[in-house]
Figure (cartoon, rainbow, N blue to C red):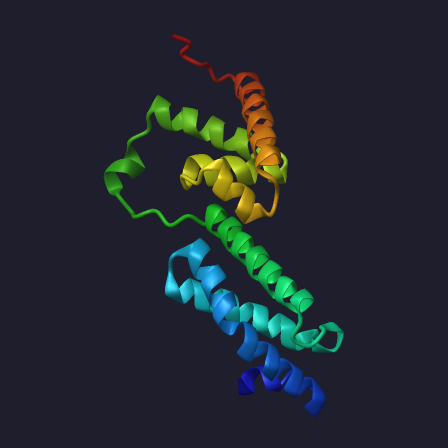
Length: 176
């Protein structure tokens, strides 16, 4: 807690922060862990959010339903940021055979990757969460804070746009 207090100037703000910390730490950790399924990552998310709360403590209300919603939203947003960072910096084990082995399939995946990267952010996020990480649309809608119907529509539009981009880039579908 001392780390956070270094950013906070007044004693009143320190007491407000301490009350927020005690009231919402468990909830914040639960929300982060529920989405990430990794205790260290959940701790990192909670720490990051508390740093942001400490930096902005003057404009944050004391413990209230509005503050509760704010901290949960901040946790969700940080989780999404973490997903974005991981999608850009995927860890792949080194394998010399794979390094020297180029196939048409890999070339096709490169075209697909380029096409996915051309999608608008929200469409790219839905495609990424659904097809790379295996989330269903209901889970995606909760994660992104949108309705299920909107998540379905984004998924539908993303697939259509992705097909158009893929064909434009020279990819082809095996239509059986």
